[in-house]
Length: 512
Image (cartoon, rainbow, N blue to C red):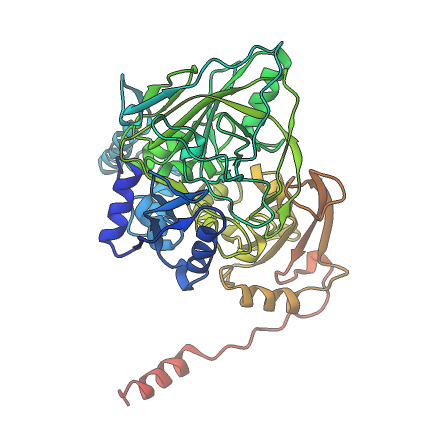
């Protein structure tokens, strides 16, 4: 299902009973975080919240703020246009595993899938709702002139303006007490490979320095950082566009584990079953979704020194400390007249991002099975804050198969950041942490069944000795085979017979 704006999405949530409006003023400095954090910690993720009167330095913003809109399984399924996330995953799995047809029926089935894919490719249009209000900033200083000093935007003297929009008009959150400032937390950052022209849509936090400049926190392993390195090598300014709002599938696609070079807007178009219309930016040579709520245009100058960014209360549950990152200079802001500002917060799990990440796992599990046919299921427990901890179940048929999977997962995209992998047999529900821990403790000999190695680490991981490099542990909690050096008999698991279970069920249901 396609949503034509973020307000359209919010309205659908309200009709479905998934939204709570808050009409009283709430400060973007910490108060909204506290309210949202309490809601996200409720069973099942709570409700989405529409803060109708967010305040910035005491003044009510003209933009309402929506948060936790993807923070439950039901809302994730709604954003993806399916009855459930599993149903969407099954549909995508059937598509990627499609084989050449052997009958007329299979031919028509494959043809229908091809027709659906027509909507995946974006198309360019001349204008869009994201340009109902346009504000171009004055030309930036030349590189020979000093960059203007950045005021402290949390200072009450630095108030939002009226009329033309600036960053100070947006209800951008200061999420946690030790944060270095306000951060845009749900941005879709669009960049382009200067060599191939391939587009990338990623999600990187944006720290606001003043009304004209921000930090750009793309870690060294991200695709946008690779694009940036090419601009730094040539010394040319890098165009960047930040998209806020629009269809809720945009932030999901921006965080999806797609291969480098595959356009996230293709995935978004497929999921919403409607082509994404793109319009050219006002001040940079990029295209953005025409139905976005807010677009922030600008550039990064490779000749400008990096600037300290952070601290920031991150999805790890800890603050990431200041590190140097590129500075993003704003050249224009465009938005809808009735724009809704989308936000999220991250911190000690469970939070909204748990559902986004878990949905990605479900959707891309069929793709992973093409590389690992023994893989049955995969889970990223909330306590592992995405990739720190992975539970995987396999249909084990030969010795050392669990280790083969560990090495394979560590070589797949963002799975390279995984610290701990626990592999269990296919009769284990990997989404039941208690069941996995039971098998881990009962099926392993720590001296025999642990694989220790080293590799790339998340730069947000504060526990590693060096940034971006760390250790990894794999645990083989499967039944052991003779070929793995196990010479004893493996005992059966205690289970009641199905016949007795049925008889007792009947006794207590009144049938006997």
